[in-house]
Length: 143
Image 1 (cartoon, rainbow, N blue to C red):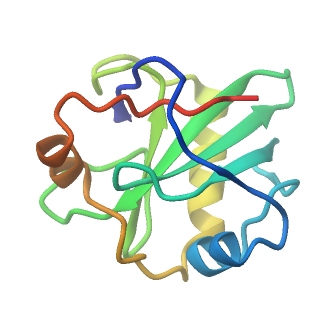
Image 2 (tube, rainbow, N blue to C red):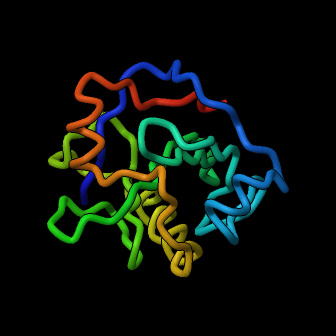
């Protein structure tokens, strides 16, 4: 499974609250507090460096970040994809590191919830993001 690297978790983004207009518009049926695939959505950040970061908490209490990017038919593919989106687990991996199975299943369930969401104009593909922000710190606060 693919993953996208994350640097220090000090990114300057703003958390969306339940009912926030940007969150509802950008991610449709996903809001803070939703239980999805055995995890709970803890935070949805505004678009940051071409992605919408979502923080989730697994049933074991582990926090993890999912980056929602635009889908790139030429790849690389995320852990899960919709027609317009690609979801990457931000676990400091390079795509060669094994993904935590529980987190990977949560990402796949999240993609199912986002199946009908169209690409927001501020979203980049992973290749575009890497080219535009080669030294980017993509981590967001997990709490």
